[in-house]
Length: 536
Image (cartoon, helix red, strand yellow):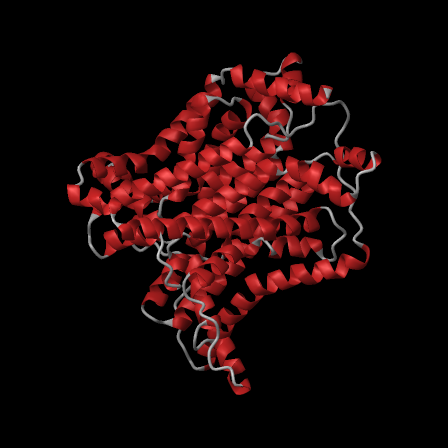
């Protein structure tokens, strides 16, 4: 009771404290930069014709909006159902080869949605590989993969790592003594997980689920290939087919409003709660849970997940490449696109993490009205399609900042706006598990606010920071619309090389950079998890 009362009291005191200018000014600057695409949309929308606004009230528009919401809810729920047990098994259990599984289960995040959708059609389509294998057995047609089933399956298998990485970071930060007290009071292992561990994982689950929901709303590649009409599809239709930027801007504002609604709902699910230790004692690593006879069953399930999300897609792409090479296909040079991808992704990861830290500190340490809106505004970019953010920056740079037009600086700025929420989620979840008392103790010993944060808090949230950098790196590696529009002349990445070849129906030429994209992403993810383990 005393511990719970102290937790509530600390939360209320934190809500009344004013953030220092050293945190407030950078957070406000980041929110202001993220507001630029929204300002562009408002500028376009206010000058839109009456016909563009009437588009919102059409039955077809409302139907597509409803389909988008249903898809986001389904993908988010399925992603949590997959990621939560996998995260627990790779952190807490004596799972065989769990280091390798920790890396492999996170790698589907590196596969672009348009590649995943294309492979889904190739494998499970009406005349796909599976149907051809089953044809001798009398199977003439498989269940329909187009529409909602294919889009939900593809996006779930590619986006569950958002939740997985966030929950893994949170599990490493939990103090096992709390669970041991529950077991000592007679609670079963299953009851302890549901009543003690799971509630303390709520910030991490919510952060990952938020990213999944916003990613699903903004995706275009998978839903277009699998013929499931979403709200993003309607926006792209106005941009690419109707050439109506006013109507597209009006529709994009609805997507922003939907994203803000998701953010408000996510904030209310954890309002007034703290997730750090309030008692005395020293935290220690948890002892592995022995699964006994279920050890190899859990390994088989995790291996099956890796097989369907990573091994089979990569094998299919490799098969296309090898077959093309055997038939004498000439491949385009890949070294320059690979270097460009790694370089720009590394810079974007550093910029994204640096921009996310002050906003995450504001949200975790100084909750309040202004903080809530700064946080919500920072998440808006992730809900917008990449083409909307890119075109807004093209307009702003060509009108007010022409020296950075068609430069890497503008491209990195777009990545930072798009993927800032990916960095914020992990950092904030880690901060919520670190008690402010530690910083206060450092302050009483003569440390300044910035020194206390750098020497006390930052080392404790290092796994979350590294997870944030890894997420931004992987997302930048596969980002397509912003790279196509904002990249300097002649600047090619693995993502643009894949798309250029696929758009011209050169399957072999598209498969080669796609395979390399997955292989290159394997290296930073391995170092990420190794650094995470070393920091513990």
